[in-house]
Figure 1 (spheres, helix red, strand yellow):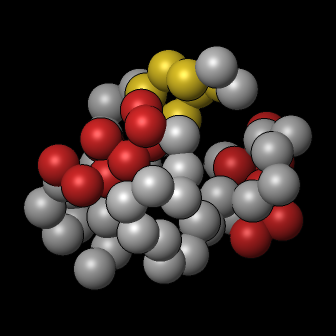
Figure 2 (figure 1 turned 90 degrees about the vertical axis):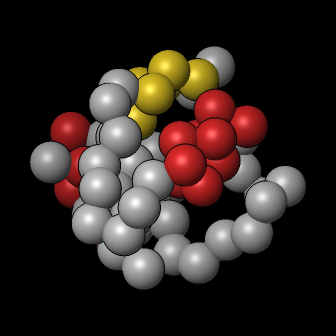
Length: 58
């Protein structure tokens, strides 16, 4: 869906943010990402730049 609907910079990669550490992304996204277990998907995360879904793969 990200590749089709997103206007963000990661849309071309299907929304994949790649590897990141704390302090690299918006706090709202990091909070969701670091609270998930592997295989879990967040609910809707709202930030100043839009709405996001976070899925943890590793």
